[in-house]
Image 1 (cartoon, rainbow, N blue to C red):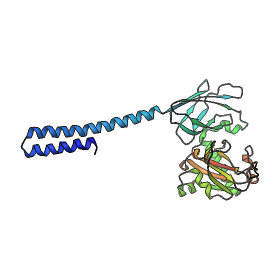
Image 2 (cartoon, helix red, strand yellow):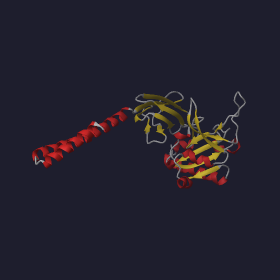
Image 3 (cartoon, helix red, strand yellow):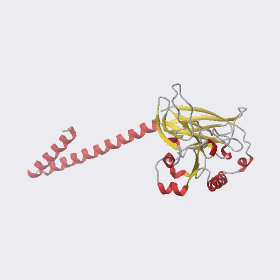
Image 4 (cartoon, rainbow, N blue to C red):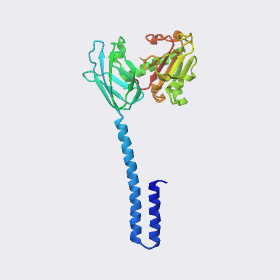
Length: 289
């Protein structure tokens, strides 16, 4: 039995004896002592909760970065987003950006600016430290993208999504289907696709979920074992890193559509600039990155 419970039972015993013996002053004093014990316990619980909150706040980290063009000139008004979170900042005149109170962990970051091709990267935010990043954007040849605002860009790309769906070349999941199925992870929808395999991978260098093409071979190892062919993943037209971890995708409630091309021959010309040899999986969000 704990010290606190023994003390509480002792107080109740003395309180009963004092009441039976007709000692009102002693009974009143013991009741006050019991109330004080309860209040002290509540205060201790609050102190522990406050300490935990302070520890959590102390564990937050900082992301400090810069965005430049290919001539290393700083780019103002570049948009930096951490996928799957509400974190989104814009670079200043010196091309720099800063994100505060970032919980440690692995994230997908997207960098975009009007007139330049967007880029992406996977970052590992350390605990109680500052992560310093640098991104270089290439000038875009797509003139339409230089004048579109985010809302119209989202509308146009979903119209293109619908055109490709009507052509019937790949496999498609619409927003209505996503809402109806109610999956927890965006990668779950790929498990229903033909010619596609979704696997949990754990190695010394990687831990997460990847998507592979069953139609395409990924070459052979030194022992002549056939390797899996990791598909190229695209988010809102942004090419994601090779062998991308699908766990870093936005949740299904943010996804407006998914299209899958499990073989190189089926990939449409709109995705001609990506590595298509193992097929392509494209995710489109409702608000756009």
